[in-house]
Image (cartoon, rainbow, N blue to C red; front, side, top):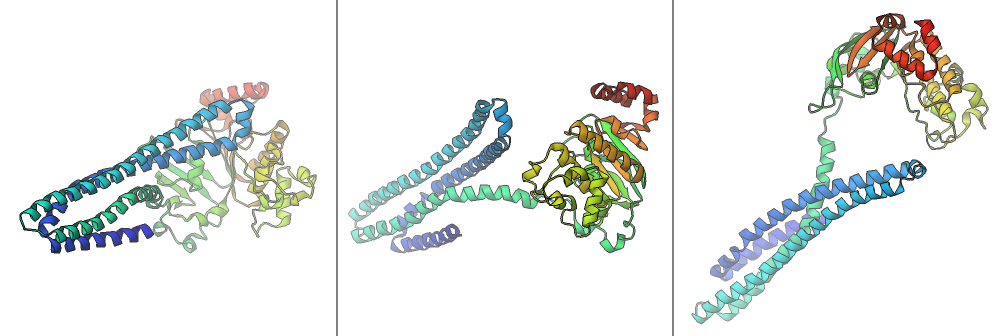
Length: 460
């Protein structure tokens, strides 16, 4: 703010001094005006260069800082594999890019200040040369020339101060451009286009159906489609499973259901209402999500299951833990449900953290339980407990499940086989096995890995 006020003040002073110089001697003032076009051109040129360089320095600094944070979070992995030197070399590349851009900005900044100082001396020399000739001709007095030179000094003082501020001004503009990108980013949900919560409250009180009708999706206009013409229907009480290789679009479908992603093509109907018109808060009670990576807060076990929701009673927390077979290990913890977890549940095993995450999904009371590869990264004992809990879910609730281990979803009413963003096969477990296509191949591979080939042959 002070820089802007100083800039305005210096501009006013410069104009006032120029007018005064014309009053002293208009001929000498015209000589001074000759230097302004090259000064303005040089200033504009260096200003543009500085802005571009500061954008580079900001980006380089952000990349370096982000990489450093990533390395600090993964320091155990770095040490385990002895990759310290490689990490250091990579970080040095980021800092070197920042240093090179910063050196260039300093060179341009110093060049501009030096050139302005040099032009000041040259201008004074021109004025003395021109004025001396006028004095010899008797057209100018020595007093007027001295007064003019003293006044000229006053015009170059704000010019030098302005050039010294250009670097900081361009640095601020570069930072503002990065911030502006966030402000101009369109909101994912425009409240003006949404239905009023009261208008759809009754229609969304109970889950009835979810219908995807020729849905396609891509992140922006410059990226390829990650979902291509996907259609399916899930009714209350049914179990829908999605299988396929990594990157086939399974998680994208689930994120569209939860309104994490918007601007899809086609139609998604929730209880007959277009999903894009439903405020997210009006549908949260319908879905509970168990994510692939369990995230736990640095709070008690009770809080991590109830999430501070007053509607979730102590009894409901215990019931949810019992439902997923987590109550026995929680009760054995010091303090039981009041056991304090460390950051991200670091004082629990991966399987225990996953069970608490599963209990959370049940306790929140969603009518549709969404499972995003619920048995990933767990030990065999925990996996068996989760499989038992999923077996109960598949008989009692509406379920949408993503699974790599196909034994998890053999009892689903409908299985969607995804590949390259498209549904390539659909049907029940037995129907897809009879086809002998992609699903049968996935099941064979999965059974070979899990050592469950005899069971697979028996089910086939």
